[in-house]
Amino acid sequence: MFQKYKKRIIYSIVFGALFYLALSIYANLNDLMVAFSKFNWYIFPLVLVLSFLNYVSRFLKWEYYTKVLNIHIDRKISFMIFLSSFIMAITPGKVGEVFKSYLLKEHNGTSISKSAPIVLAERITDFLSLIFLSMIGAILFGYGTKLIIIVGIFFVILIIIISSKKISYSIIGLLEKINFVSRVSHKIHEAYDSIYQMIRFRQLVIALLLSVLAWFFECMGFYIVANSFSAASIIHVDIFAATFIYGFATIAGAVTMLPGGLGATDASIAFLLVSLKNISENIAVAATLIIRVATLWFAVIVGIIAILIYQKISHSNLKDIALDTK
Image (tube, rainbow, N blue to C red; front, side):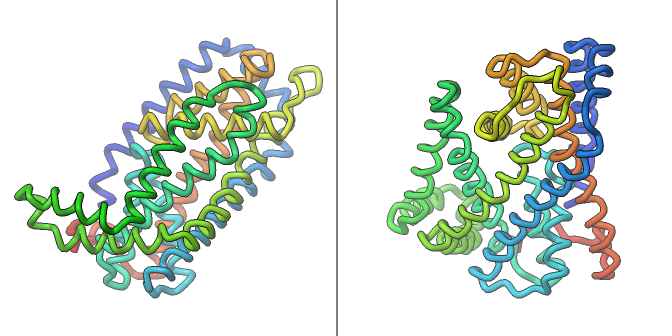
């Protein structure tokens, strides 16, 4: 599984480097260096702590989902498996995060079809929480409301379909008429049973609360970054604006399905800082690059470290992980 995505990860890193180079040229490299010098770097560790609190909150959601599905695993191992998937944060739509299902199967034999739906449940609750966090700002600023509503409606409809066994079984029945789908119908039914359990009202509410908390930590991180340049360099960005800009940009990046939202999320953050808060381009780009290092790229580094720790404590080798989905 890891080998399968290695090239995509490398391509994503190269794409990210090229995009950030283009962004730097756009802001004027010399002016960008001046902007970086005006940032209070002493506050940067706090931003990293807030990002890590996002990961911890999302881990609690992962733990909750494993309990809902009666998947038993030692918490320390579970935490390493969860964090290990962050190396896949720069895969399209974060689909590579199903990597933790492969690690789970390797560790205790849990089938991929049973645990992989956790990734879908995580994405649904992540989107809904970001929509919730962004909506107030969208109304205040009169920007992005249509996209937020459209994405929100899509996920509400998706939840309604999943929560209705009658509708879902009808769709599965139609799909089973296709030959290659019928051969894995038992896996589809197991996957649906898993997602159905996680999307019920009580489970959905608990997961949503954890998601809102998780993403608000990163919004707070962006708020701190945006307001940590020298006073003469930036107009104050209040918490509502910071939450909207970061939340909306994250949604925009996720919708594009680009690896880690590369390009779309970054450009959205910089554009919104300039257009909504009249911030100079060089400061806006500097703030964008700093928060993306503290969130996206920090997550990848955490994932690499977690993989090394996981291999050590579990005495396993990622190259030995089977790619079947049984």
